Length: 453
Ligand code: ATP
Ligand code: MG
Image 1 (cartoon, helix red, strand yellow):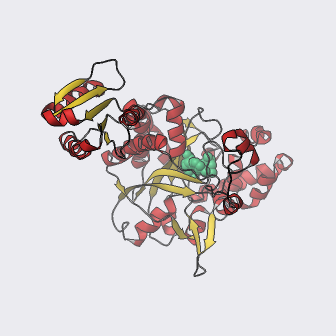
Image 2 (cartoon, rainbow, N blue to C red):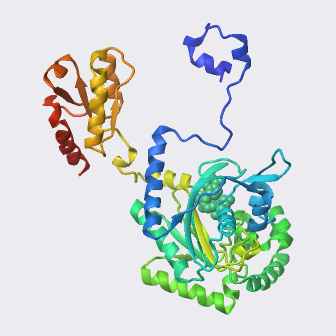
Image 3 (cartoon, rainbow, N blue to C red):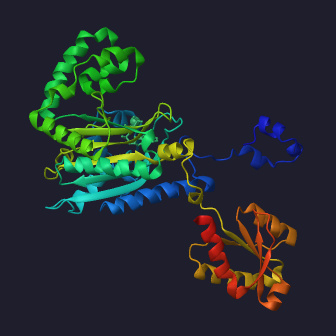
């Protein structure tokens, strides 16, 4: 940026001549709500993603990767025309052919499309997981972005309630392993069958019509298009009226009620606490029966970190054979934020360097390069950065200090002459050691075992 305020704040730049073309060209910046993930953060993301990937494998899930762009019709037909996502949040554009394409706002529709397209749903069950960027045109704020990232899973061909319970247990295990379990709450509801929902809809509309004067503008619009979503409204002026509204859970069909009771029975047996939230309806049309969200109070109003449910009708709706399905998605930004807020990031998850290896002058560069390679072969866990780019001895030591590594190895003319290396402790008051190069790997192994144990 070259605004006047900025250059005043940097007096040393005053009077520096800026060429005309430079000053008239505004620097290009990232798109609002779409974030760069910088080195300080990426280690934390990798830690989180690594934990989830590992867990998915332990539960027998296989990864699926689909394109970030799909035909617009896929999302309209699956998420539903009268949902926030489709009505106002999608990034939709015509490509050069005139086809309407959309940056995926969520992962389930693409996953179903791909599974159908490749015959993954023929007479077989599937347990799939995915991860990647999603795009929604929302007002950016803490925990809410226009490009955000989800990790999710989808299962196909299983009617539940055992699988419903297992996907919830999988998420619960993740919270435990991350140290988050005491900071999240499981909210649960059943949306019943299509028929039960249709009957309930009439009861609900009648109730809202009796309270028409209390509905806000958005809700009045939804009264004809999607009255269940009114229950989801966060308008405090409507809270009391909504709390007293008839509850879908009291109007379930028998099968859905049995399904729900069996699910809660399994969660009870597994010792997973939950809160039944009769107003939990989820913002996507494809859900039926089980819906759930894991929420936290530690992130302000963006409190849902994981959300999902059963969507038995979706495959058929997209042209496939009727296939029961259940899944969930979690928001990586919110979970990473939560880990940071609660200071639950283990030190060694931050990917810090163990060792900075430097030649004291250029004559030892080649030997330093080879020594670093030998150490990497001998100690595959070692995080070692080689000093590159020359410079004075002083500047090399400064770089070693700044690298964050605990140890430095120095190679100079003396070391080369007698086959040794100098080991320096960068973060402890401890004398440096001169070691035969042949013993280096063993010494480093011991030092690292001590710190990592
Ligand atoms: P919200 O009620 O917060 O808008 P949602 O119901 O629209 O969430 P889902 O479509 O269920 O969200 O997506 C699952 C998860 O993805 C959410 O629980 C949240 O953690 C994350 N998520 C959704 N939208 C965003 C966003 N714009 N920015 C960051 N994370 C998001
Ligand atoms: Mg939303």
